[in-house]
Image 1 (tube, rainbow, N blue to C red):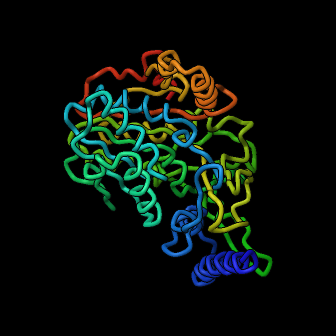
Image 2 (image 1 turned 90 degrees about the vertical axis):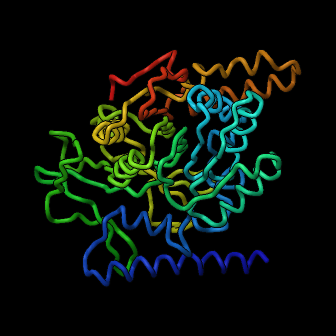
Image 3 (image 1 turned 90 degrees about the horizontal axis):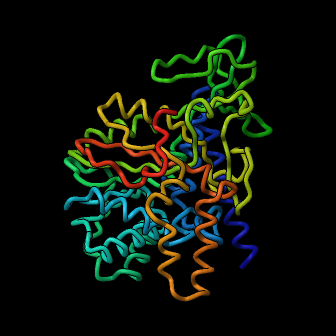
Length: 376
């Protein structure tokens, strides 16, 4: 069995490599890294997020906040309750379905269930897993869930995107001979490699460092910016919660961050090499929340809040779940989970929460402790 499984993985790997190679050779020039990343993550047959492999949790490649603790989803539910007003919830890329289960469970406890909980999920495998998870935990609420493949028109309520923006294909740029050029991907007999485009990279929507050192490399995510813009048209009124690892522009373009933010994850090991384990590893770039905020404002959104995940969860009373727990062993267990979610050395500082609002004037509870909108 082990040998046949290994042969299957090699076959899987080689197919995707060949598909990308043919695309490059057909065009007779490098492809943008965003194109490569799109192949690697979202190819309809062999992409990382299309595979049937376990990618989340201890058996996968990385662990998300909902997989760490139910308290993460419970806190998100508290924020939803404040602004739902009889509306719906729309979650993008719901992973294993754990976050949806946590939010619905807590909203049920708070007597504030949404009419509908929509999930936009492109992976058939993950859709099946989500149905299993929610059906097992909350069978009585499964009829409230509706799976979509595109944005609904006239949506009213709360939109949730946890670790979605970082997985959107990004362009890589490098500073060379006085201007930024795109860093593309080419292929030769030795495999894939980076290759600079010849012409300067010009895009009025993007702010870049003014005077970086030569070979300073960074990323821009036009797809994430466009996605935020498309949200505005789909929403009649509501709040959007974007939770991801990233930073504001000043920090994003810090001189010491001269190799960019590209990271790959395979079996809980991080690297900066996207050209190995193609289709079998996650590829991400950190979110430039200033770019996202600018795109949102240009469309008409109001920025309702921006802070660290730690401050967001503390503002929503994550510690109250500890004080309410009577069982000592369970309380110790929950305390360890809270540390993972809020401490600076874990998820607390690297993850940020950005809230966008349309026709929503409520001052959000998640930003009571800190609101760093001015940093954007």
